[in-house]
Image (cartoon, rainbow, N blue to C red; front, side, top):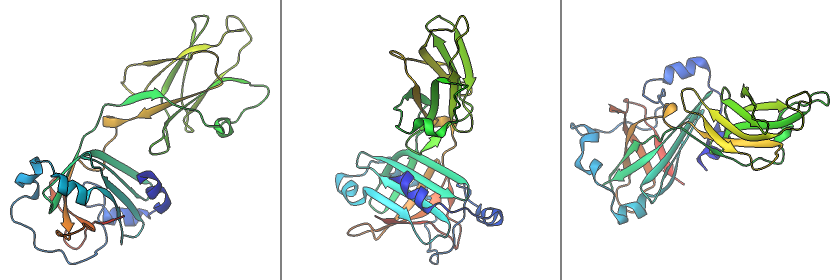
Length: 273
């Protein structure tokens, strides 16, 4: 849901505009929405409620989806889950960033804490139009086409190392290209004639190799990759003000991110969906 919201609202910013707005840890300063009110003198993130989980009543009132409004050429969405987790995404210009972790609230403020899992691979599912994204010619038949992607954000991953072990025990290797794909061409010379891929291995950067059994001849293979801690999150910590503090919560306004207060004259406001 967050990825769809970002893609639909994604508009490219001019370079000068991006530089002018880059004043927070998110690399962004938003246009002025309302005059900024007086903040408490004590650090916001130091409030005692930041370490206490939200009560069931607070969770019921705040859990749900929120979207950024009133900011030109920027799309952002936040989902507070009832299980205490959150998902966040922001898109501006050519930059897409996300964060995920846990949230806590005293009913008046919300504290977001990013928690990054280790990078991981898992077996994926090929789509019906898989081959349409790869140029093939009759004189160079493809025996196995491998694609590495991240379905949640609809990203494809280049520079992922791939090894294919064949039924003859021999190994061929390569790296995914800009389209996230790597093709192992069919070979009729010895010792490759008549042999198929028995298993695949993938790795990214300094990660260890991870092997996947093929379970019979296949024409396509999809590997899902979640970069986790390898990718810088949109933020590590964020504090938001709940507005109004009584009744149904309709707005969350950013007060602090990564220990820095929201700059005067510009604030992010997320409206309940």
